[in-house]
Amino acid sequence: MIELKNITKKFNESTVNETTIFNDFNFTVKKGEFVSVVGSNGSGKTTLLNLIAGTYLPTSGSIILDGTDITKQKEFVRARRMSRVFQDPFKGVASNMTIAENLSLAENKGRLYGLSKGVSKSKTEYYKELVSSIGLGLEDKMNIPMGTLSGGQRQAVSLIMATMTPIDILILDEHTAALDPHTADTIMEITDKIVKEKNLTTIMVTHNLRYATEYGNRLVMMDKGNIIMDKSGEEKQKTKTDDILSVFVEISVECGN
Image (cartoon, rainbow, N blue to C red; front, side, top):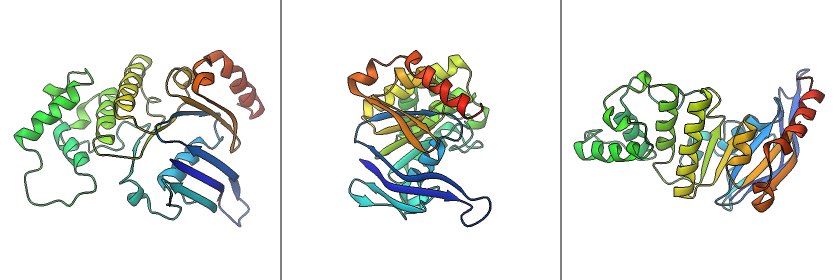
């Protein structure tokens, strides 16, 4: 479980450009929840992810992960227990390295590196089995550089890389936004499959309201640093896209979008 308690986050503090995103904000995600977070631009969605990942530190308040206070913990330390897939398909992968080499790096996250071979024959076979499970035919392209793959293929491999080692939280930062609709649908199906198989606690920020209603077991809508809608369980499953679209449009109009 991760809990944000009484979080205040200010940018450009004590200057004329000071901006407050969160003011005494509270948010809890239970173990095993798959939370979809939606909201208009400037609602605080990405800041929320950055606070959880450690990219930003809160101005005040605390962040608790499974009973441990991680408020001041560095981002690279939190990365041992969290994984993040970004909107940009090139982030989180080494473009000049092969698929197998990228998977090897991901598998050894948090471990000490020796002088042994990075990708052995047995490991390559194991990696082939991993990527074959997503059904994109990448098992025959293990020695191809990641940079030559399509955006959807890179995101699919990024998902595998993000979940190869045991993690407490999977963070999905608009990970389908840069993809065409068909490819985005494929990536969401792969995402759902991985999350369910590994029973991962997942927080997904998305602008796609259909994905927010169709996937996961909890839906949160944010506005101006506040949670204005929070549906889970049966209530969430009964929620349709049109149910939240009207609220989303109203917020956007108020924001001048």
